[in-house]
Structures are given as C-alpha cells and as structure tokens.
Image 1 (cartoon, helix red, strand yellow):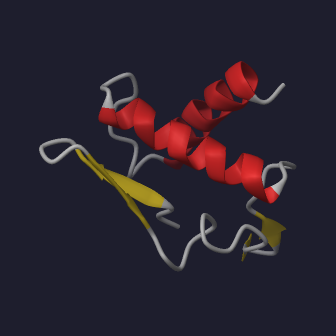
Image 2 (cartoon, helix red, strand yellow):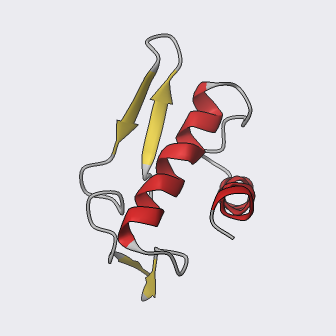
Image 3 (cartoon, one colour):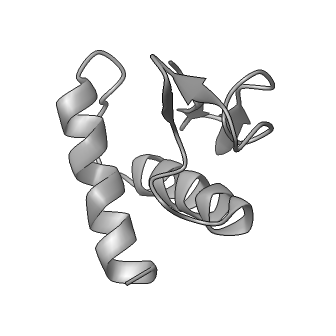
Length: 81
C-alpha cells in the first residue's frame, strides 16, 4: 500500500488519504500497519520517512517494500526508541 509519496521538484509530500496516515488502525493482510506505535507516533514516522525521500537521504522505494521497511526501521530507531 502506498502511504505517501514525494514530489521533489515541488518540495511536496503527498499523503494517501485512504492510507494509514489518515487511518492509523488500518490493517494490511490482517496486520495493523502501526508498527506498535501510537497514532500520533505513526503519523510522525510516516512524515519523517517521506522527509528522508524529500531531502535525498532515502532513495526511491515505491517498488521495493523491503527497502521501504528498512527506511521506516531507521526512522523508528532514531526517533521512537
């Protein structure tokens, strides 16, 4: 599921209005998407993940779920543990 994307040319983070940012209790294949975080923390993680893309710290991961998870894990470890 696409949670968000960035448009680096316009300096924008685009949030999927039907994804976990808007619905933190969303389940994907029966598993909650929240990674054990509170709703507010999950939203923060999603934004920080996308800021990583916007600033060039993270490469494109839209077609690579493992890479995306590794980036989210890096944000979690740096900011929420």
